[in-house]
Image (tube, rainbow, N blue to C red; front, top):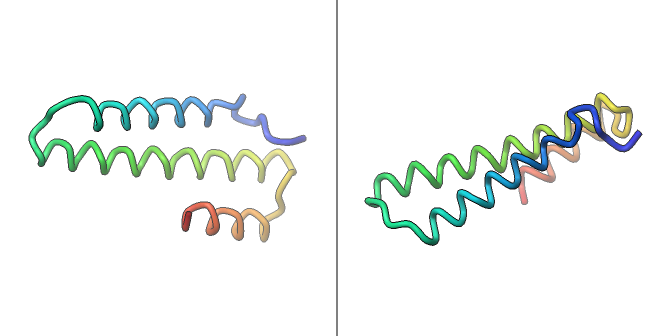
Length: 77
């Protein structure tokens, strides 16, 4: 069924991550604040990956082994 279990909301996570990247590039915050924002960006990127992979698993596009392989591949990119 090509995903859709989460009504494609995982792409909303990507939009938020892109907005956070814009904040990092265009706003001036103290270094320790920027470091925490960057940690949040990493978490958002991982959340999108997990949501996508879980979506495909429960939608029947991936089986358990494919889910694990693709999750590992995506997280390593």
